[in-house]
Length: 204
View 1 (cartoon, helix red, strand yellow):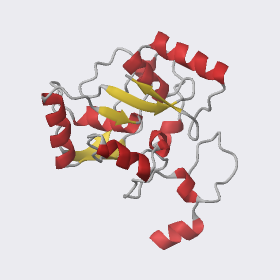
View 2 (cartoon, rainbow, N blue to C red; view 1 turned 60 degrees about the horizontal axis):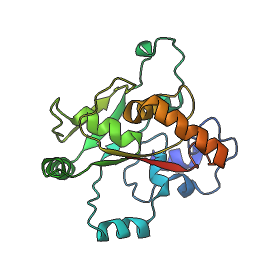
View 3 (cartoon, one colour; view 1 turned 90 degrees about the vertical axis):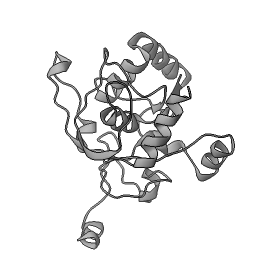
View 4 (cartoon, rainbow, N blue to C red; view 1 turned 30 degrees about the vertical axis):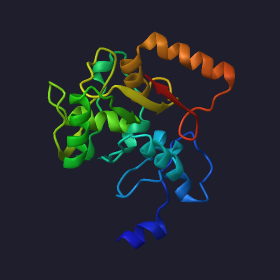
């Protein structure tokens, strides 16, 4: 079945990418291991093996988790009342060691950095109301928008997202809508690249 998929299928791409990508690895993170996602977690496209090694050398602990991005990630919010928007559920896994390291970091006052909105949704889904990350697997339809109280994440690395997208609403929930809109204005003025193959921002 896998061989058939590879021979007949092609890499799912966001609707704003019109040309085919000659090398599918171009739309893949260097640390991807498990097949199943309909889209790349694009904040991770900025990381190279060399950069990851430099971070580890500085004492940054890097731990994996899994969230299979669904096609719903490209679906804009069309309802006037955003609470009426229905998220497609997506499969996630938080390994035992990942949960342990995140919880240990938080217990000693360290900061948890999420690379991408998929990491945020997986960790926030796996966390108790007190912010204790529990290992496990399942499906999440968590919709994070302004007013949401984050339990785990301290820092977010993310790309610049589409207007009216659930991804942009998550970022606004994390950093505040006015601050994010000011950052987007600067990005437009300075000619930053948006969306999947665009630039990233670090939100502290």
